[in-house]
Amino acid sequence: MAPPKQQRASTRELRAFLLAQALAPDGPGRRLPTEREFASSFALPRNAVRRTLADLEAEGRIRREVGRGTFIAAPLAPASADLPSVARASPGELMDARLRIEPAAVELIVVNATPADYQRMDHCLDRAEAAVTLGEFELWDAALHQALAAAAHNALIAGIFELFHAARQQTEFGKLRDRIVTEALRLEYQRQHRAIVAALKARDAAAARAAVVAHLTCAHRNLFDG
Image (cartoon, rainbow, N blue to C red; front, side):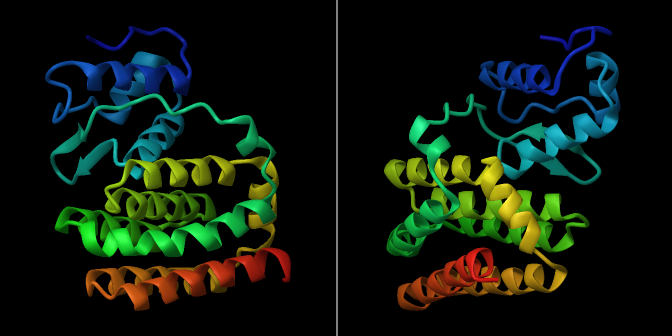
């Protein structure tokens, strides 16, 4: 299936096109067109194409290899619809739920995580630390938490983390977060993320749980007590 020719489209249609490619029998591993080619085919600005591909990479749906190109990493699936309860969740409710559930998921991650899972975590850490904008950092911050959820290898845990991710996208939470995140705080979050992943790699559940609690407690304090 070739991209549409010179018709005005949206980034949603670009994502839908990639979904169709991924669902094809030979989808995973397929090399994708360049940003320039997508921009021309979909009549989209290059920066819109770049943001869409960055989102998909952060989700682990595509992979970029320097000097080789961009490839479909796994079948893409449409994002699950936000449940009404998620749309109504307040930032406080989100953080309270995360403080109680994410530390508990550590036990499963310590037992079930694979070398590929840790490689994915490291990739998210590296990309977050290399981010040049707050938006890019937030993208890879969210990707790290999704990588942690995937490393539990438990469908229910993955589903809960997906709900957390959907709640984080709500406007109220985003405005609150954007008001408090400074460069110093971003560096502190990066150090905390490194501590979490290091403890998980050491298969030290107690240390990993403590690191997760410390990170979420810090985030909660900065969001609501700052």
